Amino acid sequence: MDITVAYFHSLLNPETVKRDFEQIRATGATSLVYAIHEQEEQRWSRDLERGLRLAQDVGLKVYLSLGRYGNMFAGPSLMPSWYTFHHPQSRVKDRHGRYHDVSCFNQEGFRSWLFKEITYYVTNYPIAGVLLDEPRGPDITCFCSVCRALCPDVTDLPRFRRRSMIDFLSELYATVKQADPYAKTAIALLPQDLYQLEDLAMIPHLDILGCHPFWQLLHEDIGLVDEWGRMLVETARRSEKRSQLWLQNFSLDEHDEAELENTFQRLLHAEPDEIACYYYWRNNANPGSVWGNTRRLLQRIPRRQLYWQSTLPRTPAIQPVSD
Image 1 (cartoon, rainbow, N blue to C red):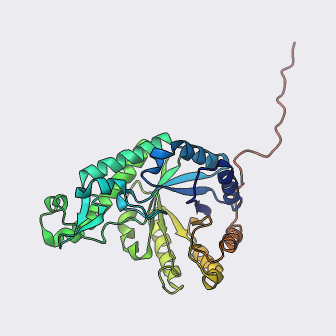
Image 2: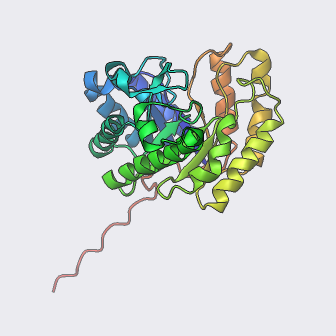
Image 3: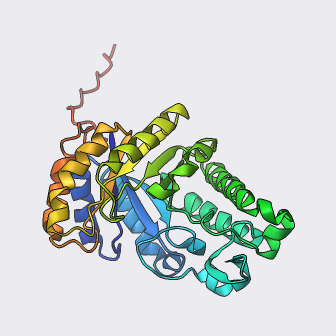
């Protein structure tokens, strides 16, 4: 069972970043999720490059998360998408003629821009893959001119919207693989979106199916963690993909923190291929305690060797015998 940790912090101080990454690696983590927003690479590309190299140096493979791109995906900062702001015509339009703050994935301009962005990152930065975090789409049926042209039958628009999203994600993940055939692709869903699992599992270039079973954040019963975890893992196994379940170690008060171990054990019981969580993420009543408890839980998982380099002493080369 692998461990993935999301690092949603600044990369501007190399010494701090190096210390954090070493601490994350010491938990047994093999992968890191780093979220980037549209304007960040334009302003601090050197910091991004250096930070990703530091992760690589301690043995962490980095998955890049596209934060708020087109306002389609979740991201650590609640900032609007630059693309959507500058291209208001790309926005989703509902049946009442109201525009929403998310670009429609059927708009060719948006697709072309996003795929170029992905190709650029995969080609120019040391990343091992791309993760899409809580994608939005089928929650609003779009009546924009493009969707109406592609599907003139208004009664079929909701189903068309769901089919179109799968086509969009299929092309997006294929773009990742075209840029780097060895890059991994992942998606993380909220529990209310697990109805999409079967369709997502059919995407050939998608490697990892993930879920955020955040029962506390969603004000649900903890027993649903078992149901959500089982649904995800079973679907992933049938489709020969990897499964990833996330532990909510953020937005916890003292009572919620007491349930951290119970939640963790339920995730383990589902037997996913990966457990994921966050590094010092926001709004905890006791941040240090939450991360300390998270570390102890993760360290119960059998770990791989912490560093790729061999620790065995080298055998001196045998010198040829001269005549």
